[in-house]
Image 1 (spheres, rainbow, N blue to C red):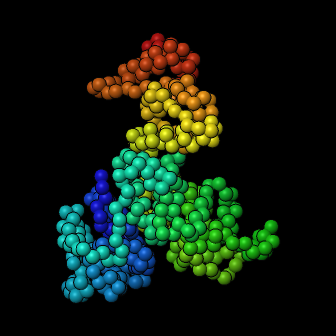
Image 2: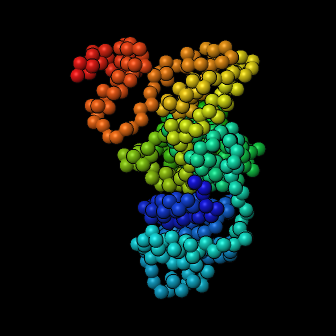
Image 3: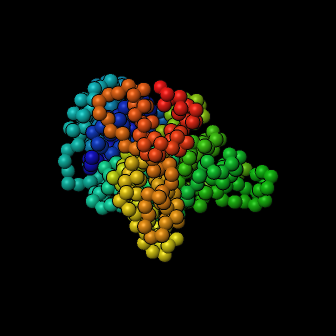
Amino acid sequence: MQLKKENILIVDDDVQILELLHRHLQSWNYHTYKAISVREAVAILKDTSIDLLITDLKMPEVDGFELIKFVSEHYPKLPKLIVTGYPNVQDSLAAIKSGVVAYLTKPFTKDELKTAIDKSLIPSNTKTHKSIHKAPTTDKGYGDMIGVSEKIQEVFQVIERVKDNKATIFIKGESGTGKELVARSIHYQGKFLKAPFIAVNCGGIPENLLEAELFGYVKGAFTGAETNRDGYFQAANGGTIFLDEIGNASLVVQSRLLRVLQEKEVLKVGSQQVEKVDVRVIAATNSDLKEMIRKQTFREDLFYRLTVVEIEVPPLRDRKEDIPFLVDKFLFKYGVEYKDGFVKITPEALDVLLRYHWPGNIRELENSIQRAVIMSDRIIDVSHLPEHLKYVIDFPEKGLLTLKEMEKRYIQKVLNATQNNKTKAADILQIDRKTLREKLKD
């Protein structure tokens, strides 16, 4: 599935409407940027090629009319679509005079939104800022990333769009899917590649130290602070900071991070003097931040400022066609490191890797190949693979079965695969031998 060429910026202080618009636009394959204030919208416009602006009118601090005025003056060819819950004749006339192409009143239907977007996106040979190039979807890789599956190619397309601007990016995905690799690709494939890239594992730094490590501290700020010291944000100035496992940050750190995103400035621990920073923030987590928001352990306002652009990295089980290419990459890497040359894998061993569901994702695959290279000579066969990989069995569906029948058939398949070794079968099934005996009696 190819993303459409248009970049759409949606601006609304009502996060529910913002998410509704975002979902609708995603369903039509548009690439979206989100802002919950006019200030954030202006920052995105200055940094990014946008093809359509969708904005609310009534917003706190600076209203949508000021944004429309700004766009009309600075980006006169950018089409504008208004979505408002407070319609009146004066606003409608003022909007039309400002060059607004379409005007939607809340609540609206999905079809009404689509019609308004189609009306607004008049084909033009002129981009509003700079041209966007098509992502390299014909190759097997992007930077250090590799894959030909549809899902990973979609990730490459989004990276291609965001690599040359400093919009805040949120990467989500299971542990081991390569979220840091996505962040590094965004940085090193774009025009800021010569600037610093600082990766911070927020889950790997003790909570009481994370604040000082991120923002720095001044002499005497706490016991042991014997000199002034810059933090990771100052080190990343001009470039990119990648905040992995952002869900581990305390509410105090979250509050300070919000200030960085809002004001583009950092306040060291123990200091009253702010320092301006120009940093692209990329955050990632495998935690459910919306559930954390519900439990009041993660700030909702920070969440929406972090998710201007969202990238979801697919789990390896959803991109199994990429496994042969990833295996080749790791065979070369560890073959050179441990065997001073190329290492090959037999078709049978590769079939085992393709059958497995990879709960640990790419990290687990890499570790398995590393171990197999060490255990083999120059050819990896099934015997060199970890035991728990060997007995995973494809179980094709042939009609709908009861749960009891499914369990019975699977137990029998495991027993056949282990040559009726009940100890090994019980280990694979993750039950004890007594439970296995009872199930066999049934």
